[in-house]
Image (cartoon, rainbow, N blue to C red; front, side, top):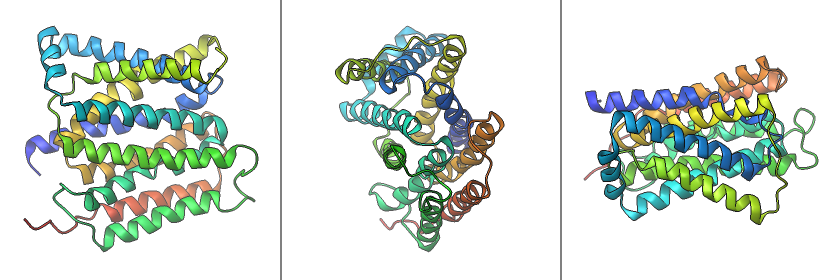
Length: 298
């Protein structure tokens, strides 16, 4: 791995650490309707990213970065990020936080698998990736396949379906973003703003009741917007374009255990043997899937 690619991959690791707080932050804001939460957090994220780039890049470079992105990069980023987070917030509002967290975090494993399947990459799928995928799928079955351990009543199953859709959405976005390779990350300012606008439109179209956040909820929303929504997406955008996408997928499996530790410590998810075993399976599956595959010919 070249020095530049290694540094970009390390930047992606920062995003992964920030995302370990996403599940807890989302759980602490679950009193806020889905699209309202989406609009608020991404508006905060847009402001955070704008402030950061004004300091680092300056207005002229930001404007040049906007012009440099092709239409397909704008469409991919806005659609991928909006859809993922709409499904993510919805999942946490419909189903218990612990199982949703593990099901959603099939996305790092899917990144490794899609990196080997989708055209345009440097490696192809091999037996480690296939076995790793089976192990990761087994973790999901373990979690939602037994009603004696995991709530499947009411809206819970819809929440798990939303979490699975999250995993596929984010993994596809990440791998395709690597393939598009649009220069610079300054346009993430407008991407976050566009997602906030779509969240606002969704709020009114679906007829959600507006809920005024209280003090602790505002704090959680601000932290979500500034960290795992704002700064993390800039880091991930840079990393998926310039880093090693397969290694990023494997590193991402530090997120499920960190997320679960935070949820359990905050009393937002019960500690259980099944959750612990599922977390271990997902991490093991990703570690196996990260074994370098064969290079593509030509």
